[in-house]
Length: 572
Image (cartoon, rainbow, N blue to C red):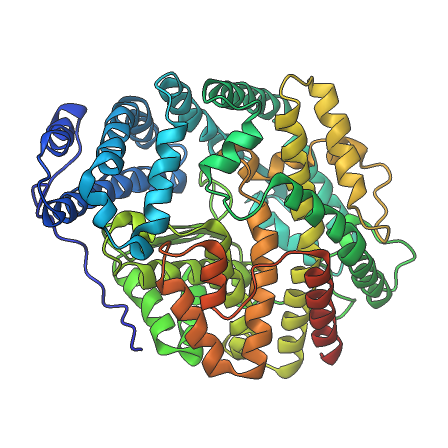
């Protein structure tokens, strides 16, 4: 099948073509129109669904742009106010109407006549929304949406000084690759100390969010927010018990491999003891990998890299570049992290990241590029709801792209030796990320199962869980104060609660895709695009099957895939 990145922004037929969301009074009439419209046939129902989908796409994109603009410049109060206005004044008024329209759909006699295979996951999601909706939760969810964005504002101001110059914490990360161990230690501690400056505001923010989220769960009839969130996220295909099994499997199957990776790093560096500031370093005389100079160079090289894999992939980034849907360089006042923001009307999403000329930035770029390709492939689906794919599949799109592109990283590196080092860095990271995923996920389970915990109990239990998955190859002595608040660097805890186990599940899926690619590149890429183009129209196991992989994160599967990655590492 031929895919094209030349997608067009969806045209309006229900809303005015150049509609602008300035206040609730301009939007409400369209909800009322949908609420009151008579549906007398299957054709009427399908047109009603298309009109509702058009409005959902418009509202979603409007909200997304408000978030994009605010995260690109956290110091601009006007942008922050525009974001807050949507989530305090618009979104709360939408929710009751959304519930009314959901009920109108499921109660409509013609709904039974819809193609049940085509609409199964969509209707399942609608019924879930009806089950979870509570009027009392509207102001709590609005307050949470605004509060959680404070994390980016606080973190965006974090800077350190080194050699007379100011750096964002992302930019400062390059010093951790220095061959000078004293510089590495100095900068590591400066970053950690800078984080500690804001430990109390971040603790306070997290406590407020926990209280709000717990009340939302109680209002919806759940005993804790974890169980509510599993339902809200549509985790139909696994349970908290599955997550606990994953945690134990990581301890048993992955942590020993992580120990081995860091022991080998210790030998390469010729150290008696490994410290956390040594994990990214190269031996004396070997320059750190610098795959690009700035965001423009990163983008140009990424396009060439993706072209070599499949020209359609490169075209996706070209289209985004033409639309100015990229903000790649790290700078003061910009929120931390990286994301691909789907834009339901435009189709071409927005990539946001904090590049600082490091190897990890190359990985981030192709990762977010995989997400972007997913957005392009799903854009042609008929309804906005069809494009809302499970996060566990979304992360397969991004993580598989990290692995697929490796053989084409020659555009970033001048020689074979640098390519080998880059691939080794990537494959080691594929393994070493698992304990952190398990740590963050297990911590979230504890936090929301014990919502009335004290700050001291939070610290104690964070350290307990952190130490469960910690490698024995790294000496953390003397760093207890830093480690006690290390969870605060994970923005997901603040902004997207319970979104983290997906990275582990999807990493296994991505390794499975790469294993497939090793055997038959053409077939693997065909399966990849086929799976992603289904959006959210199939169940999670069906989406994995369409991509030619198993939805399986059992200990046996984890062991099998870890052995495969280890063998690939040994070939380098």
